[in-house]
Each structure stands twice: as structure tokens, then as C-alpha cells.
Image (cartoon, rainbow, N blue to C red):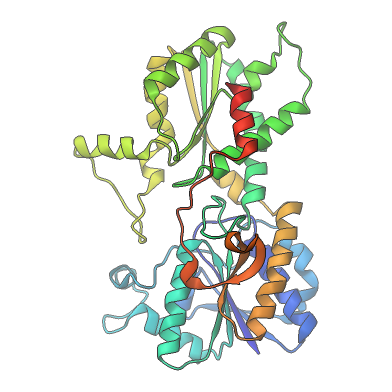
Length: 394
């Protein structure tokens, strides 16, 4: 039996550890299993660039799990975007990405392919499964759902999201002290989340848990209110800047600072509309997503709020790369372990799909048909822990 792995999309705190734990699980069942890893996701699959992974790695899964990132490397390549693949020289003019990927899998005699990524990665895997089936090539493709955004239908908790929230909170615990460098200081903590505000909300929730464990000297010097969160902006709720700025200005006047947690997708429609009206060029990636790193939502909000809050100093800090590059925490490792067991079971019986906690099946760890997987799942603003947090911060 030959098993191949690839990790794709952005990083999340689960990639290397997922591969290590998968290898360990396979090896416990059949110590003659062969393993290879395609470098840099679908790019490596198209270029047939892979790493032979020795079975001895099975005894080193704990070491692998202690590292963030992916030892195989990642990339953002869409197998159905023929033009983009040709432009990047992943395929020749007379080839298609799906055909090339399938041929390389056949050439390497791969029986099982594990794709570890978000909705884009696993919908690409679905396209590959369909193509291989049409060519009568027997290959089992089993995906593991990673994304720090936690925004994949119908999966209630994606791999890596727990850790990203915890690490984002740790990041802000240091950054918030910058509010002591100036009078009327505005700090915007920009958190990853294009369409879904879960990570921003969960990071805020984790940060406020840290605050509960912190001792302060109220009213005299170190007042908890200066270290607390004063606003949370999410994609799921339109930001009324005029109304919100009136509330925040009262906080600025009283505590001499304002701390905001901002999801990178919050207010995106307004920003894009403004850019179009100004005839500014909007850049997109291979999947048709707006390149948020070039738009810089945090900077946009900072420029508006600085004036409205009469801020003397503004600081925008992004925790995304810090959080997504971390090694998985205890909660994520437990989730990865549970996912890996079902992934290997499914692979051995030849059942393709994505393994995850299925919201439509009482959150049971299940093999979910690729056709049910899609991104853009919004955060539920009505969950109790989020409502309670909003009530506490006003």
C-alpha cells in the first residue's frame, strides 16, 4: 500500500502533525506501508516533485507534532484553473491540470492520497476524484479539513482553529501594552477571517480569559479597562462607523485608549466599493479571492477611526502569521488524533471524502462526501459565549 500526502493553502497549526499522526496510524496497522509527500501542495503533484518519507518517521510523530508549518510546504494552486497553471509552467500547453495530476499519481503507483487543507484544497480533491473515476483509475482520496477561519460547511470545528485563537490572544497580550506609549492611543488587532468572524471572536474570547487571570491596580495606575477589548468587528455584521465611533469616543475620553479586534473581512464590501469608485485596481488570487493582504483592511479602518476618535496615535497589528504558524495545542492535537483514526479507516476500505465533525450528523466524526464541502460558512453571532462577551464589553 502506498500513501501520499499534500498540504495546501495557507498554514494552520495542524499540517505537519496531521502527517506525522497519519503515518503513525498506518504503520500500526501495516508496517510495510510506503509513504511519499508532494512538495508545496498541488504544485508538487503537477510537477511530480515529491519526498520519500521513511516509515521510521512513525516513531517520531511527537517530534513532528511539536513543529508548526508544513515540512512538505504549501501553495495555492487550483487544478481547474488551467490558465493559471499554464502561466506558472506547472503544465504544458497541451495538458490539463487534472490530467497531469492523475498521470503523476498513476506513475507513482499511489493507492491513497491525503489532502490536508481548507475548502479550496478539498474541493480540488473532489475534482480529482471525479476525473480519476471517469478514467477508471482506482484511488482513494481522503481530506483533512484545516483552516484557522473555521468556516467550512458542514464541519463544526476545523483543524488548527483552536490553536490559532489561543496564539492570537497571546500575541495581543503583549501588543496591548503599546497603549501606554501615547495619549489617546487606538490599537487595531487585525485577525484572519475573510468571510467568517469565528477566529476573531474566539481570539477575543481567549484573550479575555487571560485577562481574568491577570491582577490589576484599578483606577490608580493599571486599570483593567485599558487592557480590555472595546470593539469587535466581524464580516457577519455591518459596521456602522458613525454610530460605533460615538460609543468608542466615550471610551477614548474616559480611558485614553481604544482596543479593537478586527476580522480582515469586516467591512470588505464598503472598502471594495470605495476602491472601485476611485478606479483603484483590485487584485485576486488563483481561486478568485480578493488579495486582502494588499487591501489592508486594518489600515483602512485605522485611517477612518483616527479622525473620528481624535486619536493621537494609531497602531495596527496583525496576528495572522504568528497564530497560523504555531504548533497545535492540546485541544487541536486531540481533534487531529480523532480525525486521523477515521481517515485511516476510511482509506483502507476505499471510501473517499473529508473527515470532520459533521454538523448534520450530531457533530459526529464522519466521512463527509466531497460534494457537501464548501467554504464561506459564517460565524453564528447568536452563540452564547459570544453574546455574553459583547454584553460584558458593551
